[in-house]
Length: 217
Image (tube, rainbow, N blue to C red; front, top):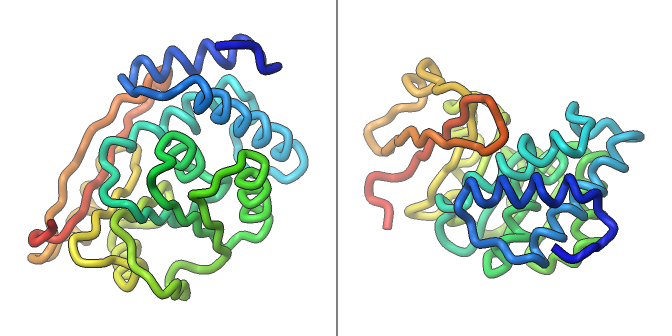
């Protein structure tokens, strides 16, 4: 990667992780991913956006963890519920510019950072919204809804139901398989799959709970 003023260790660590995920991500997109980490690290010193302080650790815990869901996106319109510091929405939007992402959070401090990051990175495929998900009425529904460390599955399903169009796919990013949550979420109209994912450079269990209508497209 040509020099853009980043720590060489960041670039090498990101490239190693992308290779481990077997993703095709351009040099320009990798540069933007690193720019995002630089912004996050800088804002984090004042605004406490994430408990992860070291940019070298942000790469696997935030960037690679976010990108691990990329192959499970469906359709064009994607909603990231409880996006926090823009995760996983911003890394996904950088690497999938053909899709439209809405990043939703009720925390004003975090949505201000996300809006600034979107502006500085020139992401034309991202809309940032500040609202509680149960109160959010955008006048549209979504093809894929992503939640990351947001709430128990039964609560998530109740809160996002009005935002799902027919055939919508819900991706809940989890650590260990939440067996108790699955029992509470199961209904006859839903299909649930557990998708184990291996995040390179991260020694922690990760699973995606994929929930969709049994009559999905």
